[in-house]
Every structure is written in C-alpha cells, then in structure tokens.
Image (tube, rainbow, N blue to C red; front, side, top):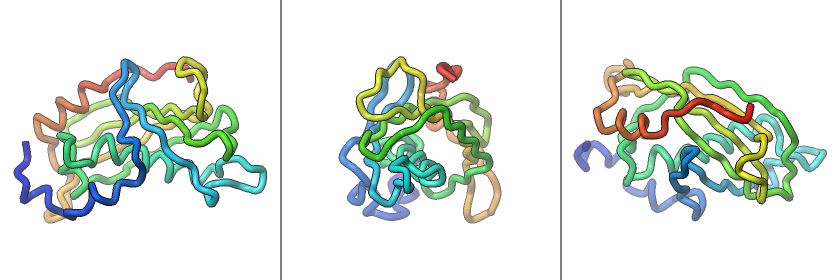
Length: 168
C-alpha cells in the first residue's frame, strides 16, 4: 500500500465528495448512483450526449480515487487514452439519479480499460443499458511525464473487477 505522504495530493479530496453514494461492489462490478444536474439536460429533457462523459467521470471517482481504495494513488496521475460511448436508449433528466455499473474489461501493466453500463433510475439491473462506454486509463507519473507500472495492490483491486461486457 502506498504511504500517506504520496497520497496527500489534496487532503480535502474525500471532504469534497461529489455525492453521498460511494457506490458498492456487486456481482456485475462497482455500482454507483450519479445525480443528474439541470445543466446536464438538453432541449429535449434528455441527458446531453457530451455531458454523459462528465457523468461517467464522476462515477469513476468513488470507485478509483477515494482514500480507501488501493488505486487512490492514481489521482496523482491517471490519463484518459481512449474513450468510446454508445447511446442505445434515451435517459431523461427526470430519471435521475442514473445508475452506473463499472468493471474492468482489460488490465495491463500501465493501463486498463473501464467498461460502463448506464441505466436510468429504477431500471432493472439486468435490462439493456441505455448507454455503454469504455475508457482506457493510463497510470501516469507526473514527475517523469511517463506511464508508470501499477502496484501489485492496484492491479489486484482492478483484477477483482475483471469481466466481459454483457447487455450490449
């Protein structure tokens, strides 16, 4: 586990949590509810396609970057290398909070790919997601400006969420 000094990038990160739901582990991955803001809506009362990317980022924070996670050190350096979003159905603003299930699709020495399934509030967890997405994240050393190998604890934590995508 990383020492506390290396994790002290910003002592207030956990005090500024975006929302009360820290998420939880399920048999399908890590699930968290993300509130939808008025500004996330488009003229048709749907969640705007570009704002969905921000909501996915907000969903990742409690899963990967809070102090109690083995991957908390990554908040010092983690880059998005690739992003794909597929919209399979509408999510209306009044179907908030959205429920985001995250899991690891691929894990390598310096990077991993997060899979997402997004459903509106109250949707059956086994239903077809309204949005599916992937984000390739790279563990990065800011000082050397190079990718860094993940620690054994980071990899073990991420490995525990490894699964194939379903419902696409």
